[in-house]
Structure formats: C-alpha cells, structure tokens
Length: 422
Length: 123
Image 1 (spheres, rainbow over the protein chains, first blue to last red):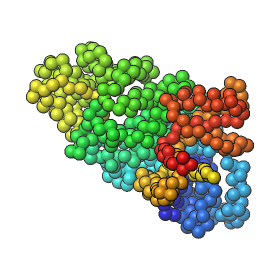
Image 2: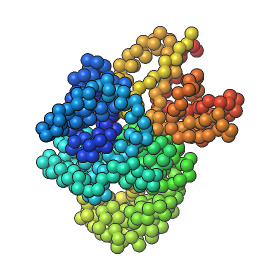
Image 3: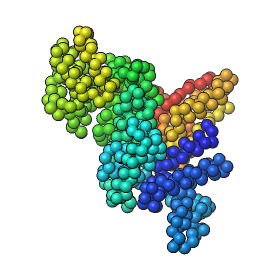
Image 4: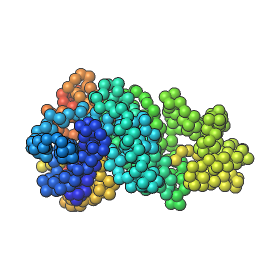
C-alpha cells in the first residue's frame, strides 16, 4: 500500500478516539472537528517524512489540541501572547501523552462522542448523519448519496443536528457505571440504525448505501474493543457481519429481490460469516440474552445452513419466541410466522399473523406474507387481494415488482410458494 | 531449522482498509508466498480473526478463568501455538483446559482463524 493509503487508513481509524478527546478538551463539536482536520493536514506533511508516530491517535490529539489553542489565542487579541512552550511542541506533547494514555479515559471519550451524535433529542435521520460526518468522517457528499438526498439538504441536516446538540445539555463529566451502560445501549441503537439504513437499500442503491453497513460494522467493532465483555455488543457486531455477508446474493442481475431460500449461498462472504459465528458463540457463553444476540443467533442459523432445506427452522421459531418476550412487536411475530410456516405449515402461520391485521394494516410485508401463505393454502382469490394490498403499500419499485411476481404466479396457478425475508 | 514469523499490526488500521486495499496487500504477500511454496519451504500460514473474537483462558488459577478478549499481559511471552479443528468455542475451551492441566500457569488465547493454508515445509 502506498504511503498515502497507509496514512489515510491510519487517520480514519484514529478519528473517533482523537475527536472524542478533542471534544473533551474543547466541549464543542465544531472546534473538535476543525482541530482534528488541522492535525490531519499536519500529519499528511509530517508522517511521510518522519515516518508514522508510534500512537497516531495520541499524536493527532496533541497536535490538534495545540493548533486549536494557538488558533483561539490568535483570534482573541485581548489575550496575552501564546505561551510558546504550550503550543506546537511535540517533545512536550509526547511527554504529556505518557500520563494521559489510559484506556478508561479514551473509552469514555469515544462513548461520549458517539452518545452525543446519537443524542435522544435528535431525530433518527439526524443522529445517523451526524455520526457519519463526525465519527466516521464521511464527506457530506458521501452521506447525501447514501441517503439519496441533495448535498445542500444534507449539509443543512447536519448543521441543524449540530446546533441542536450544542443547545442540549451535554454530558462531559465522567460517567458512572449505570450511565455508562445506558450510553452504551443508546449508542448501540444508533449504530443499529446506521446499519439498517444501509441494509434496506434497493438493488440500484446498494453501491451508494454499502458504506453505511461498512461504517456500522467498523463502529460496532470499535465498541467491542472498548467493551470486550458485553454480550449485546458481541451480538450487535455478529448480527451486522452475518447479514452483510449475504449482500452479494440479495439481488439478481436485473435488480429484483432474491429471497433467502433462493439465494446462491456460494456468494455469501465466508470471512464475515466466520467472524459473526465466532462472536455469537462467544456472546452465548454469557447466558445474558438480549435482542441483538437473539437476532444474531437467528442470522447464524441461516448462515450455518449450506442449503435452504438444511435450515433449523424449529430453532429459528424458538429464537423468535425469545425475541417476542425480550422485545414484543408485531413485526417480530410476523417474522416468527415465516419460521412457523416451515415447521407447522401455512395454516398455523396464518393463524399467528391474523391477530396482527389491525396493527400491521399499513405494512407492506404483512400483506406480502399473508398472500404467500394464502397461496400455499390454495386460497387464490384471497391471496390476490393480499398481494394487491402489498403492491399498493410497497415503498419501492423493487418491492412492488417482487410482489407482482408472486401475484403473476398465483394468476398462472403455479405451485405453492415459500417466502422468507431476504 | 523452522522459523515462525509472527505478524503484528494495528488492528483498527487493518480493519479500516477498504476491500481493495486489503486485496492489494494480500496480492503482494502472495507473490512472496508463492516463491516459498515453489521452493517447498512454506509451512502453515494463518490470518487470524480480529482480537474482538478472541477469548482468553487464564490457567494460573484453578479452575482456569475464562476472559473475553485477547491476551493482554506483557510479563509473559508467546512461546508456541496450536491449530485445532473445533466445533465451537466451548470445544476449543475444553481442549485448552486439558492442555492447561498438563501445563498449568500462564494463559491460552483462543482465537478463531479466518484464513488457513496448511503448507508443506518440514513434511
């Protein structure tokens, strides 16, 4: 890899830690971000000549901090001239580091930075945009592309998010154990949003949105390095890895959705699957189940099946039953019904989803699954009604086309269809 | 004499490589590996999964203590390694406990292997 390639990767991986520490010093997102940018410019000049520093994040923190202090003093003429010793002196900086580098400190810095970006006062879309901009360092253009909006709209969204965060009461004090675990849960939820935003892409958007999934995985791995014994963070990371592994098989060449049962499993990314399975394995040893672990365990059962009919549907049914207890939601029950249709048949699955009709009446997938189950039972007229409803509710042309394909099969009086989430 | 070359690098940086960057590095390494294979000198090569997937068995206590994460102490040194086919982490931990009974003290870090080439040197 070229020098610049190495430096780029190094700056990217140091970013959350460096901005997190700079935010602790300056208590202002813009200042922290600018200080980091300045430090990166210095790094691009200095590292190729002097070689990379032993601890790139520490280097960026000290240089960024000194540059920002320098900048502040220069812009404030009332103040005395800068104390030369306190600024841009790397010798001192390195000495200062020795006592500052301590895992706990950095862990809380990064957690705080993520927590602030995922501040509960912010709507979900602003949380994601802010985290991608500040923590991941994606450009506004890249984020706008991932969200399928214009660059200026995204710029505004991020600016609004920043001013909202600035107005909020930010937690700069060191967190206690309870606060730390609350922050961790909020941050995990925010990273989950980032992943889903990327994963729910259409065929035509996969390339644009893939970076969201990759960023979510990077952030989850980062959290896991900071909190190596948290089974839910293992579960979250495993879930992303196992789902992302299926991405190459999720869409056909013409852009249509390929259901899980029909996917070419040789296209699945075996490296991601191996890591995901190792992590869920580790998590389960703790016997502290949580929603992310259960979802990852479901994904793991799919990943372990070399062929669709090897899938342990009874296991998946049992895991969804656990998920229903941990996180009751009609959508979870709907997903469970897919597993039930495989183990106990379409009749049982239909009985399971019928009570959800009212709450999920506006949900595309409910009508799609209902149509599929009715088709299996040979109730074609009712199936058509359900599929028509699904098409009307489809969010995207791809979804609508997918249901239309099922509808065509019903009309052609074809063999019963299976259905499962892609 | 067989020599082991142990690979160290900043994991966060390596994980931040894009697919293309990763493939480029692996491609360059393969040139060196291919030469060694031709010469019949390359033994097993493994690329380990990230330390986040690691578990450590501390066998300086009885019963040994299982800890999440990689081996992090610096007062002990890497003295050897095993590559074992295991059904799951619990299986690997059982084997590590058996080994630990034969040789108490120190730790075993149990780390899943992502990529493994058995090699042929010393055969």
